[in-house]
Image 1 (cartoon, rainbow, N blue to C red):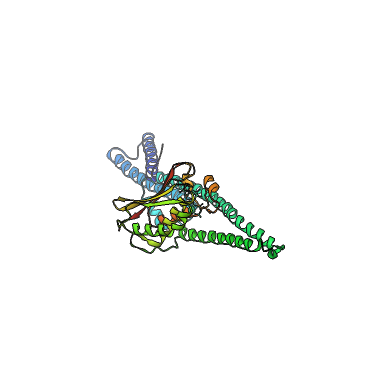
Image 2 (cartoon, rainbow, N blue to C red; image 1 turned 90 degrees about the vertical axis):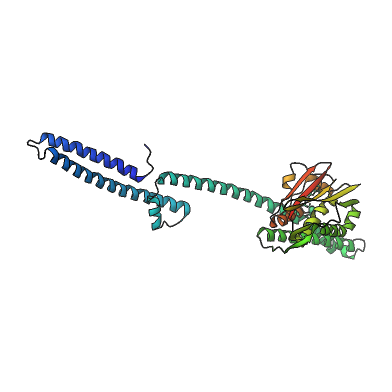
Length: 352
Ligand SMILES: Nc1ncnc2c1ncn2[C@@H]1O[C@H](COP(=O)(O)OP(=O)(O)OP(=O)(O)O)[C@@H](O)[C@H]1O
Ligand SMILES: [Mg+2]
């Protein structure tokens, strides 16, 4: 038998006690000679005393069971929610018809929630370990380089005109790289902790794309990449932080050069009208990204093996910043790619 409510238990107990009393009553009426009561008087007394007994037993059990359940539930609530049970809780619990079912469900739900939390924390822990491993790896290379050059210079290289200037220049490059890593990480941390304020305004994304392409002209020539903007003269108004979107475009276009084709490389920037948003797509005909790598390219320090082969300059932070910047605008970014054919990064911006 399953009880949902202290009232049901009290009712059953009161019924059993009253039934026992009635049996006893009739039994004693049968054996007493002459009987104490007879006829209507007997039934009247039975009804009255039986009724009183039923009500008394009902309320007694109701109160006792209620108190017992409440004391148990209070302990459960106390331990799972780490709270001090309030007086009002008792009223809340005792006026609830299916209190046991409800508590059972609540505890099961709480357990599930905790399990999910544990999984999430485990993932974060993995991520943290990876992150520290990657960070020390990324910092090690330029630091060891600096150490090597400085040691060589101190060991007499400083007086050797063939290497002294060159080694100092290389040291500078490594130090610059270290600074850039620390700056990028600082930016990511700011974005992750929500400390970055966006200065949103209305601007023409097509004009901004032209600016970025012009700014990267030297680089595109260096990589022999032709950059094309679809509908370059049509103004497309969006509402976003112009400087942050400039950084997004720069990072993605810079990648399209770095991982683009060595000869006849092409980067195309296109815009699509999507009701409330404008979709910006940057497509290249470069080396492409394996399907397994695709979901991971936005992770901090993640670089594909193909990417590493092509360039040792990358830090694997550019796209992590891009993703954070787009998400800070409550917009989305995605990537699709085919190895040997090319890659397309697409992100949305709110129309203005
Ligand atoms: N257009 C692309 N084509 C092919 N691979 C790409 C492309 N864009 C990114 N990748 C891959 O994704 C990785 C992550 O890119 P991301 O821009 O975050 O870092 P990065 O270019 O290596 O370094 P940096 O932090 O200097 O930008 C790259 O190392 C590369 O392997
Ligand atoms: Mg990059």
